[in-house]
Structure formats: structure tokens, C-alpha cells
Image (tube, rainbow over the protein chains, first blue to last red):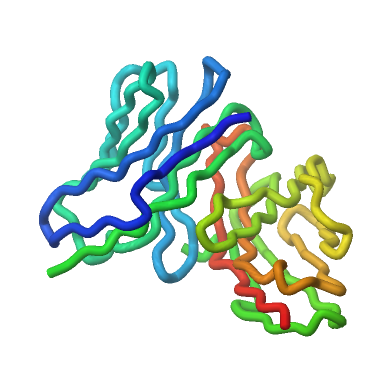
Length: 114
Length: 115
């Protein structure tokens, strides 16, 4: 069975600053994918960024980037120039196949302050 | 984004009631999913439909009954629920079941309270 651990239940960042959300995972598969989803107060989960495990280059999407350390099974999310709209729950997930093999973490609530 | 629409947004029901949750996707996807989201727990996959055929059922109690009449609509029929079934129920869709190249698109969820 695979597991995803998000050890930070809550984080806070000032507007325009940078914050890093932690995620570690465990899987016995060698080929898998990693995701970060954002869930704002509207409750709709939105894909933020994804990473293929066999790619060494870290994925980036505008202000969002990841630090993927395969050996350490770590997949942290960095948000640069934080904005008020970034306030949400952030979920890390690992996928080793179809939906039944998509495992989510318990989430990190990010607050953005002025 | 309104690609996946869920109704109702909130639902309060007694343990003896029967109700249904509805999900509709406008993205032309072939797979649809029901997830349960409880506080401080990871999302739990309940059911997966691919091309209107149920392909996965993650040991969900029979008081939850899914229905997928076509590739755009998904229902979750509820009857004789328990208070511990109170949660946010999320519907999602994807182009196919390989989630990397066709990631999940979620609806806004139905907040269910069982009294």
C-alpha cells in the first residue's frame, strides 16, 4: 500500500513572500506520478502541478514549483510571490496507475496574510 | 471552471430518508468518480465508472448506490445512512483512467449532514 504524509496541518505566509509545503510518500512502485491539488473555500479541487517520477527536472507552473527528491521520497511545493487567492487547502497525491491507486495526503491549510 | 457540476450543494437528511446526489460533467470525459472527503482524512475513492460501466467499488456499504446512465451524468443514491456518513462528497471526471495525462477535474462537492 502506498502512503502520503503531509506533516504540516497549517501554514501561514505573508503576501508576496515564499512558502514551501512538505510532502513525503511511500510506494514500492518505480513508476508513478505526483500531484499537488488546491482546494479553496469553493471546495473545488484544482490541479496545481504534476511531476513524473522518472523525470529528474522539477516541474514548474508559473509561481508554483516542486522540489522532487526521489531517493528521499519527498515532493514539496514552493509558492513564490504568494497572493491572497492562494489561501486554500493543499493536497499532495501519488498515483501508480488508475484512480484506485491515487492516494492523497491529509492536506495543509495555507493562510495568506497581508 | 464549471466543467463538473454537483447538486445539491448542501444536504441534510435523516437516517431513514432516501436522497440522491447528482453530478454532471461538460468536458466530454469518459470516466467519472465519487470521492468521500472527511475532516483530517485523505480523500477516499468510492466508485469509478468508465464509459458508463462501474469498474471499481472500494468496499463501499450498500447504503450508497451509484448510477451512471451516460458518460455525462453520475448519481449517488443514499438510503438509511449513518451519522458517520456525514462528509463532503466530491464528484470528479477524467478523459480516461490513466490519471497523469488526463488528471481529475472535480466538482464543488455536496456537503452531506446525516442527523
